[in-house]
Every structure is written in structure tokens, then in C-alpha cells.
Length: 248
Image 1 (cartoon, helix red, strand yellow):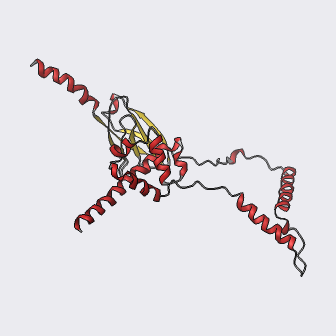
Image 2 (spheres, one colour):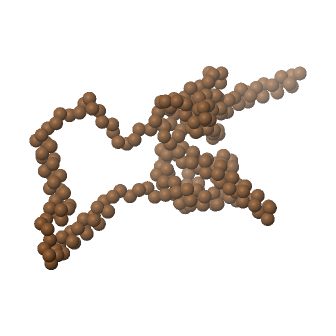
Image 3 (tube, one colour):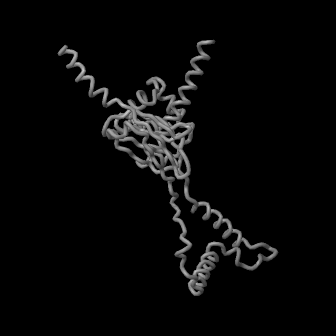
């Protein structure tokens, strides 16, 4: 009898720690579906369903992260109270980098300042595009104007911002060999990619053309979310290929 009691004391803490946290995720208008719910302590994850509901296993003091590309990430530190209730998580839409304009604080129109700015803009435009302000070319043609026009066109192309390059196989290989979070264990245990299929999975991710700015530390969870989705479709393709080979 004492042995049974002792075993119960050993099992009881494990049972208590292995409970599920339930909840519903909302945005500003309604429930939010397909939101990633990550247990940062155990590295387990799930997604909200069509009604915004989720269930995930967590122990007291585990950290849950709610993350999606279009919302600001939000964390929840699990406490005992969170087990016996439907936890409501409210997400805020990501604000773009362009500032909003407040009409109630718009500065008064200044005619002198406006004319000065306009004059400066015209002067800069004449400097950058002189061919628009020059007299019409003579019938023999004006090679100087043509050269200026060509230079202007090349200059405008060079000044355009270069968009982020897509991630390549080499980027994924380097990431999973140097990053403490993105490791081989994550590939095998969490994404369920067989070790022999890892190079093929990197090729598959390469074809998806993810932007390289996802390699920045602040975009870590967005990148993880993409890799989780890729792993699902990748495993489906692998299963289809294996099935075809068996039939043949």
C-alpha cells in the first residue's frame, strides 16, 4: 500500500503539469482563424480553427506565443487559473511603417513656404530632367539633349530601392547550422522531416521564394510559421511520390 501511495505522489505532479489550455483568439472585428499558437517552453504548436478556438498542452509558467504575419505577437504566461476557463486573446493588426495623418492637427497653409518649396522642386526637376525645359531640338537633331535623356533614365533606375532577395537553399542550410533556435532537432522532431529528406526539404523551401528579411531575429516566428506550413505540404508530396514508386 505504501508503494502505491509513493507511486501516486510521483505521477501526480506529471499529471498536473500535463494539462490543456483552451481559448479563443479575436481580432478587432471577429474571431481570428489560422493564428499560430506556440508553446515556447516545450516548442509545441497548434493553430486556431475556423472559429478562432485553440487547445494546447502547457504547464504552469510555460510561455504561449500567439503570432501571425498580420498581427502583433502576444504572449501568455500560463498560470493555474488558465486551465479552468476559456482564455480570450485579443490581437492587434500590424501597423504599417507609414505614419497616419491626423486631420485635426493639420498645420495651417503657409503661402510663402509653399512657393519656396515649389520653386525648389522646380529647380531640382530642371536639374534632373533638363530635356523637359529646353527648347525643341533643331531639325538636325540635338545629341546633347539625347545624351542627357539617356543619363536621366539610367539614373532613375539606379535610385530605385532594391527589393529583398528571396531565400535560397544556402540560406536555409546556413540557418539550420548556425542558429540555436532553428536546429536539426526542430526539423526532425517538430517539423517531422526525416533526416534523409532534409536536403530535399531545403530545395522545396528554396522554390517557395521567401523574402530574405525573414532571417531577421524579429521575424523568427513568422519564418517558423512558414516552415511549418511548408513541412505539411512537403510531407504530402513525399507520400505521393512513395506511393507511386510502390505501385510501379
